[in-house]
Image (tube, rainbow, N blue to C red):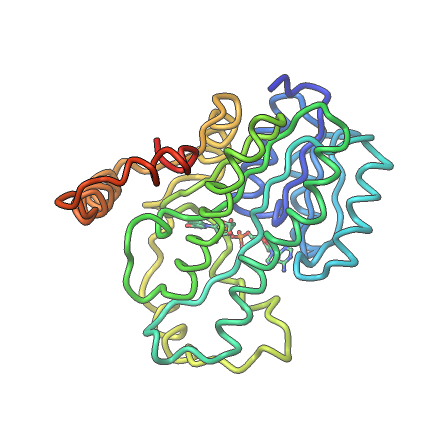
Length: 285
Ligand code: NAI
């Protein structure tokens, strides 16, 4: 990827990880659009990025498909073409699975998975149409790869977007669009405030008490990576065409164990069917 002068679009780009990614891409010479549901985040992010004409800030709720298309039109009107899409906007609930309401599931899946789907359906045809190549990054999470208790809704949504990138990668790479799943461990951000943008019709939560306990459980932010660190990591992953962009060496054992566990579970005592293998050769590496 030759990034200078090209254009990136980062959802949830006005805070935390998205802002870190926007900063790194701006630093690499790109035009950057930050799209975010929160105008106050957009205002402070524009000041922090200080990128002049190369930064466009737009208000967008990623669950709103019409708004997504209108925003894509506006970005193309301003910068011409979109080359990098970062589906990063996300929210979270944490707690015992049995306490989750339908609204808890619908809210988190709607933003984290639905928002990503909306990004792909809106942007992919536009990226393919200009033929200059591109990149799609989805911010998933280390919890998509390493089992973490009490995060069923969040982690299964992150596994979904990781899988989207895994599926799209071989399909789109020959057409010049690279797909990457960004799976960080904990990063300093405002995600604990995510409830502030929760829609009224999805307000009914089973986690009100759990959230209160969590809020009083101490602040561990100093143990987390910074948005700048992970932003640079994403830039490196884009420049190297990495499918999996991971951080945090603390998770190495967990990632390894998952790979070993799935490897050990494959039914190797039965012989392979050569015809099956040959007929569907594209499935087997
Ligand atoms: P953050 O809250 O600092 O930033 C997320 C931004 O997304 C906010 O500015 C928020 O206003 C925006 N947003 C929320 N809902 C939106 C919607 N419907 N439409 C448009 N924008 C919306 O949080 P953070 O942590 O930077 O989160 C970014 C992504 O990183 C999320 O997908 C999150 O799940 C993921 N992540 C975060 C980790 C962490 O430790 N902070 C670890 C792993 C993944």
